[in-house]
Length: 248
Image 1: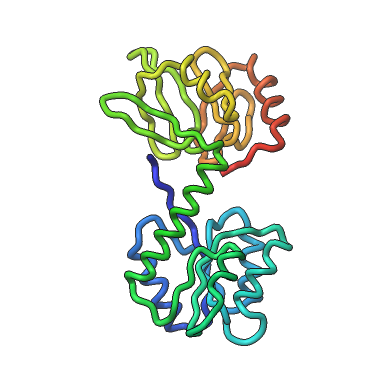
Image 2 (image 1 turned 90 degrees about the vertical axis):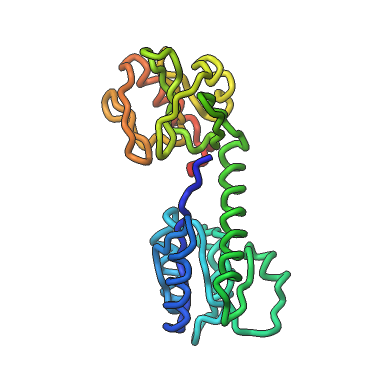
């Protein structure tokens, strides 16, 4: 299964703690710090501007003067922003259960060890992966060649025929995988998960289509593949009628 890199925004007012946190996160696989906020106002501005580009938050509960980090996090749903978070705190006694009710994955006591931070991030990654799996329709797709692999349906861009070898080619976010499973078998298995067959040799994931330009399908990771002109209008109709499609 392809393991994604999760993009995290860090909100911490203490410069020394912030530096320690960022350097520690750089040592943990599949985590990328894409933004830093030093107070609640900056935090709210950044999550609003980067909505859809951030997977999770790491927030100091107090964030210095003004609105606390915890209060800012509670206000986010009113702006249509719901992200899992790890809370940082130097308080010895807090109501941990109430933070979990907000959507907080874990509470990290300062000063923290790398091992404890790593454990928090592991829990965060697990929660994100489960959420992504459920949003994809909760379906795992097998790829069978010399070995057997499994990917989430949301990771697949398209499936095409390799006519020279009479096999299928499954294009995921990062690789092209040969598979002995036939196109007909994949179509039957995936049709209920917003996949559509557009011709004899191509099945596309409607969730991952960014746009159709002429006779070229452009996916949200910038992969491109040509499509027969006679299928374009039907494909556009399928995309436009899927208003409930959840994109990754």
